[in-house]
Length: 423
Ligand code: ATP
Ligand code: MG
Image: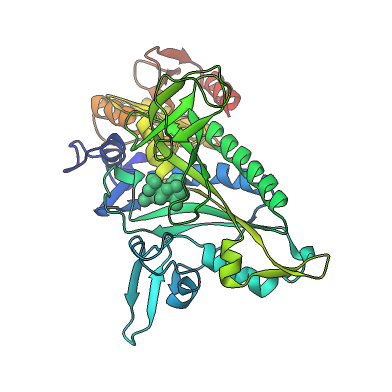
């Protein structure tokens, strides 16, 4: 990609009203744009990163038998009435009126914009599940969620409209649900490790989804909105919402470690929902003994757009973003330092073409601007490897990692080998 064609340009000044690092850097570097509080466009660079995040999530969902599909976002009131979630939290512990966007059309029909999809999946299941032979089922989609968030600060970490990958599973027995629940928990751990995060898994309450305990994947970040407690020795962890002890105490699980208190960003949440939804919505199957029984249900969510923001919160410096290679929008940022000599231009073009032929994705800064501006934008955008060709470097290419100040000179051949080793 030629940077002279890239939409839009980077921005020098900090966006007005930006409080969080991800908001400031992602907007300035041209990854996202704010339409209104909590509502964001993923610009071409941002969409590239989200596509990489989604690819990692998709691979791990497919590996545990999840089948990808796509469900609607416009839902009739009737389906939400069946579980009572159309109603207010004031009247019913799972009432979700406060978070849903509900409205009437011109003929007075009532709808909601999707804030989650349990009821929609239940409606699908009751049309297709007959016997124990039809179970288990595991389906997921990537789609937009709408939530009337009272505090839509924190940049793209908290949208009123945001992307979610939500997986749903249905089972004949509680044991089968819980076995699958553990598989999803492990798949989530793989995803967040692959994404490069340092995280903890914590027990948490179920909000407007369930009265059961749930598990969250929490990325450790000083700027996070959540507070968690975890053991420095074993896997034990709990969200502040449900933890009753204090920092520094002995771990209630292994009895050896100490409890640490930390700020964090919730990136994933898994819910063992049980039979509550199936009972409310009549999702029954015929068991081996001929009896009709409600299905056991679980739901599992990750927010890819929140992940985008969390990556920036945990990996940046005073100059800009520092992408981990597995999610970077491009593998290489090629800087052509403008010169009177046409040699530099043609060598830059050669480097660009050779790398492209090797399927290495390159952002080529071919713009008519000074070297200082190019280097500043390069650090701001945060691609892992910077290559420079200039009059000074001649037939060689200058290599610098985003995380390192060291500069090395290599032949183009060597550059290609090194980049291929990194892939
Ligand atoms: P929070 O406690 O941060 O408000 P939640 O617990 O209400 O989030 P879940 O219903 O558990 O959210 O959603 C599953 C995942 O979707 C979350 O772990 C997070 O990654 C993402 N997510 C939830 N709300 C938002 C939001 N407003 N903006 C962006 N991503 C979100
Ligand atoms: Mg949650």
